[in-house]
Length: 422
Image (cartoon, rainbow, N blue to C red; front, side, top):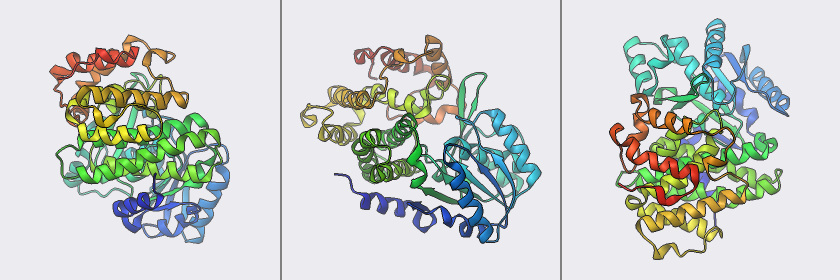
């Protein structure tokens, strides 16, 4: 059984008293923001029911003596470059002392990147990769503006992390900044805000949290954070497997909504311990046909088979979660190697089917082999090499076609036998 108490202990360990999360914490925005400045730019997304929450934020800021110098519309899904350019210009015009963002991962990611461009200059291409913002800050002597990030979706955990994903809609390719310099100084997540989220968005977000836990767990083998990652992954994945079906049946289930908020926050903890890899890398090339969380969820069973020979302990942990929840009748303890990987992959696929997800790329409207070609090309891009390096079966660019190619063919057809192990 999952344990909210243990999930909260892990989040306290992760962020200490700096993270305000739970039910009815939105009114804490004002005092939290006032600690960093008294002239704030408010970047806010809009969705059904949003007026109530924005009013709470505005009133809290005003009561704390924080002037809202301007309000900026948030980003569209996947944080397009056009929205980044707009936001950068508006922030430059407003020149705030502190940034307050209210939105899902795309809006928060866009604010992170916009502040980098506003303060450090240059082109966004200059910062894609790992550690390039920190280097530019050191070289310029500039200081990034404090960012209070208010999350609205149980999904990416952008309010907790060092990642900013930005998309070129013309090429259909997403790239990312990975840098501790862009971690929001004050994260806030009132889980109550997620109650009105549509079923598809809820499922996509929850499975993005699973992908964070799963992929970092696979890559943690032999690393200093391996034991801690087992704790985080067990809690995060278990919460989603147990409570996502309950939310799909009853969107107003407060306990289940809180569980998904905790689970995806633990996903944020995971990606600050280590990095994601195969499924995330491929998902960046599917932005025109799939949401990020859905793409990762669909791809991870296939990468699970590919990684299987080198992640036996991780597979046992994950396999038992799905087995105990009734998504597999296989005794995971009797299996090993690739056979265990196949059993875990099949259990994950069974879970996805139970919530109405497609389980192969071939089932996705708009999919074509061009997406596979794009994904293989992106995997060879030096700006995304950290995803290859984070794989438990590390690949070089020269190995991508031979080994990642069959994984993607399996994801297209559902035929796990196509996958080659190194």
